[in-house]
Amino acid sequence: MEEKRTFFIEEYLNGQRIDKAISECEGSITRSRAEQLIAEGRVSAEGTLVKKPSYRVRTGEQITVIIPEPEITEILPENIPLDIVYEDDDVVIVNKPKGMVVHPAPGHYTGTLVNALMFHCKDSLSGINGDLRPGIVHRIDRDTTGVLVVCKNDKAHICLSEQLAVHSIKRVYYCIVNGTVKEDGTVDAPIGRNPNDRKKMAIVKDGRRAVTHYHVLRQFGKKYTLLSCELETGRTHQIRVHMASIGHPLLGDTVYGPVKQPYVTNGQVLHAGILGFKHPADGRYVEFEAPLPAYFAELIDKLGKCD
View 1: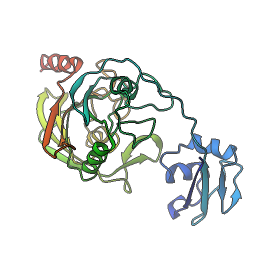
View 2: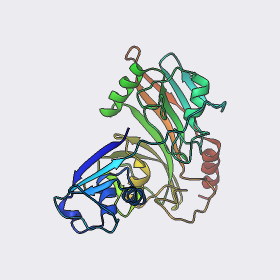
View 3: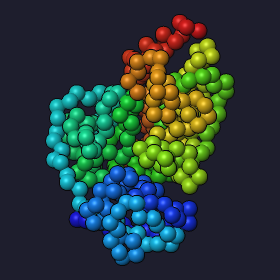
View 4: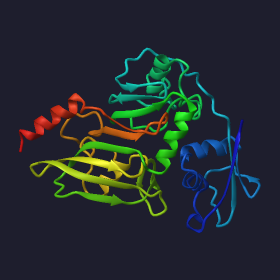
């Protein structure tokens, strides 16, 4: 069914185009999507239909957006090989490869981790996150590799979601960053949508609190550093944004780092190596590891020879 969203224009948006104001207030709606909704007659200001995206909003103005029911593409099981680290009646721990999208989304309705899980687990996946994300409690980026927990029933899903909410799940990532990081540190900076590019995240004043603890594992001359990063929170692109913010973008990250990269990495060099949580069945602490993928280990060897 259609979804109605209503919000009021804050002072900092006074005089802005309505398509920009909508994308600012509703992070899930891009400016181009807002323009489309306006063209479809689904946006009104103070009860009056807005006909052009160039309409300028005013402080305190009530904006209403009608979101149509999404056209759900049927998600089918696919016989895609999975690297299963561990599995029982409640959870599946998967080592996700580089290039695999976690769950279906526009442009990616096949070849995802969910497609593979539906084949592997049959009907044994939690349904809390709906038909497009069965079993998915958390996700990692397409080009990030590593360990991910998937829930096989709703009880397990609720238990893991509660642990995520209070930041009690242990998540350690390994990455190679540009430049020399001399000592361990912590980045505590809020993350939200980049106001200038809604497809990117950024450190913004009114963003959600994000904390990353990083530890120096190895320096490669003055050009690169191998780090382990432990997440206290789990925001979209958190490690990538935080490390770029202190002048050390991830190697291979053309979104938050240099467009031209010296090595072929097919995206950021980032691996979810360790995942620990209280098991939903009996509350015991369990911890799982995924070894570095071959490309990552080979890159370490290559950089080590250049010291």
